[in-house]
Amino acid sequence: MNEATIARQSLPVRGTGRVGTAWWGMLCLIATEAILFVYLIFSYLYLGAQSPGSWPPDGPPALRLALPDTCILLLSSAVLEWGKRMHRREHRRGTAWIVGLALTILLGAAFVGIQGVEWSRKSFAFSDDSYSCAYFTLTGLHLLHVVAGLIALSVVLAWSLAGRFRGQGYEQPRLAVLYWHFVDAVWLVVFAVIYLLPRIG
Image (cartoon, rainbow, N blue to C red; front, side, top):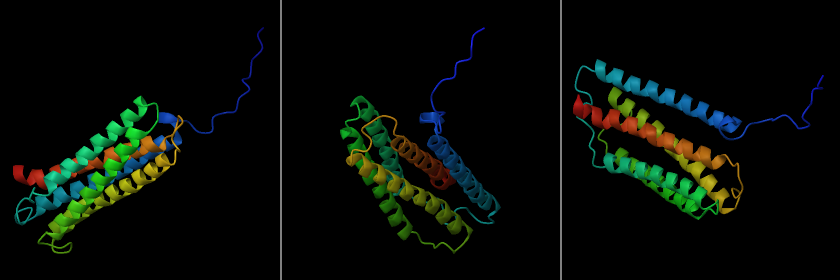
């Protein structure tokens, strides 16, 4: 009769990679934020369906700033993904990763600046009517998520410059990239609902 063999190693306290606590925490955060945006978009569409007049009241929002702003945000995601993939090929020397992070932060900051300019040119204020409230709430909440993403990427950039991610198994850069892609994906939906849908309907 064979005796049972007990492995002499400590039990894993936390997983790594896609079974890690941080990974699942980020997925739960993204799921929660996605549901929040779903509710806000539903509210926007419901208010539009119940509006006695035209929706938006002044016609579809102009694309003069919103379209280039969207392209900038999409470019930032592409640059960040390029930096992440080059980081693997460079065996974590980090040059392309740092360049990709820095360019993404600059592009994200440009997005925030252009969004601020667009807000300042609006002929309505937050409390004017239901459309203005819905517009500023939806775009403003997304803008807060962009700022949060920029802060996360800035911290990761500072840590990268300090040489913190030279080894294997660091989750913070991957999670920051995942969050930034989520923010970009949300903007595509917001852009389609606010700027494109009124031109179709």
